[in-house]
Length: 240
Image 1 (spheres, one colour):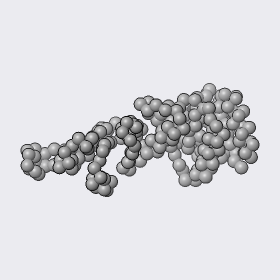
Image 2 (tube, one colour):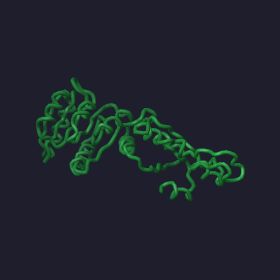
Image 3 (cartoon, rainbow, N blue to C red):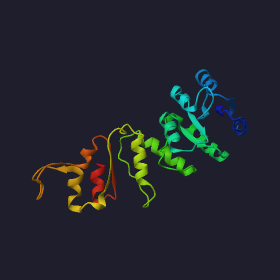
Image 4 (tube, rainbow, N blue to C red):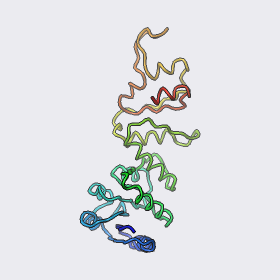
């Protein structure tokens, strides 16, 4: 059994969520404004908090700024990427849009209770990407997680599914956001010149190299280099 706080200014949401959680054997506290939620989170033991993103006195995002030790799941009717990534960047463990199902609540709660000790974090989303479905919310959360890291990211998908939008969103919400974002279609470069374009070359390195040229990696200069249609023979070299 967990001790759970519900903070939402909609009485109907609190009522439905409280009855469901109590039916599952959990102890439930509920408040209708952000200030009261903050007071409870700072003074009483709480295992998980379901917090509305927009409330009187203090918003869910403001609560996330002040509370780091309690897993917070954000509730909202605004299923946009910006809201999602903002919440995840501030430390929300998950994000769920209204209306929600009991299955969604159970799945998220089970995940949070089992993974809290691992410090799993997520993030918000980007206005260029549109979607309110559960699948898109998962994409938004993944963008937020990846944006916090400096690892090489492989984005897969059929043509036209928005891979570049995802790459731009990762860049936007990363510490690299003020650095360049370069998108390069590798298939448009001659195979014999691809390596030189990516890594640069010195004057005289090959026939026609009349001057030195910075490679695309150097041009990105601490930002993001998005490579489209990378030949398989270059994948190992790039990931290394």
